[in-house]
Length: 325
Length: 301
Image (cartoon, rainbow over all chains, first blue to last red; front, side, top):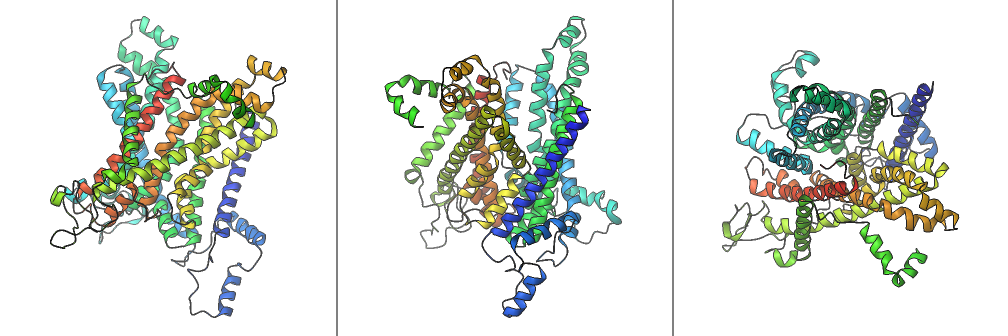
């Protein structure tokens, strides 16, 4: 009963945060100096034509009225028209979302598999000089600007060695059969390799450090000491007893990482000209295409907020000792 | 804080108490290495004018009056070569320390200050104050940080302070949450109760009994924020939303990227700014690890 109540209050909190972010975004885009239609209005338009255009977009109404129109439209999944493409923003965003999600999840899955294995191994090798060197190396990867790492990989593996294409998702002239045919083609995967590697190298630090410190905590627990006293091999103790228990908190951090990764995507997508939400946001902001910028921002925010919720629920579900209160 | 400041000179012990709360992690070799890196960069920033051989924005010409563009390291006395516009790369690196340290330190102070004030207020007073502040923190957690900085930077005048403003608006959330939970455990301690019963004001209790105990935590989050600020500034400048007037490492990387330095294999141009960023940011990490060892000795990492 209390569980259900806690989940409901967490969902209400989610709605509050969503509403607040949507409102902040509205105020940010509407209260800023400059005519939001500047990019849309041709200088040759007469004053009447301009007013007609403003009326068509509802910009002649008072701010509160615009706000409710905006909220109502959002609830119907309506995000306006892009100034540059002259197509619905939602259409554009749904077309780009798969690219961003594929990049995010492929890099994170690689990062987590590597991070978990390496973290467990470093906990095993605790106190050795290998451990010290590896930890310093891991902290260094966390200190790298992601886009700089992308630039170095691009210069070495694309421009110098020529192993991978320099950007985008497809080579010109290559034909694909449908949605899945494209995303599983060798050409697409070759384009995916460098940006995904960049993000994976940056992201492996979190699961690695978490796994290692959890392992060190778990190894001090009674049941691990018991297993050791029973004379089980170090391998059995570390893998079967300690690693299993250390793994759960690392898995919950995955959801949080998805949220962070989406933000980091903005720069990496720009380096590799990857047609995703982050790069679109940058392009839209540079071109003063406000409806599209607003839509891309909102989509990223929604995924971040949902992932925060998933992390909270997973955490409570996997470790019942944590109460929702 | 009139009460505190007015009586402080008479009792220097309070200042010592305050500063012992900071506790520089001097027993950890990594933290010492981090502090040394900071010191070197700080000196470089202060004496940038004396160290740098050229003005970082000056377009240079060779002795035969040709544009000194795209020189390789060592050519015509340029330590790291020149950019496509004929600017000295080494001088740009030297001057880049200024914007990095400026952005890093102000952002760190803002994040630590706002986060600590919000966290202490929420934790100490509880009730509706706490509810409101913590819901605000929830909202801040729902805002994707880098996209937010981009949107903000696009609307404001290009300036390195945009990053600081955005961090002050959003990134106090982590500090506030942690400090609040720490204050919750402090609130009901015996000495706080005793101070309350003996008639100390809330303000005095917070300053004397609560703040000194959460100070190391504020510093931990502050030292993490330095790195975040420098990385964010670099990203924003790289995306072209930075201040083109001030030379920063992020601006250098954007310049190199836009000038095809990658395809021309001009590693001497885009590798040094990245290495400089890594050094400063990892120095911050090492120092914060030193703090963690002080704060959570049981971890003993």
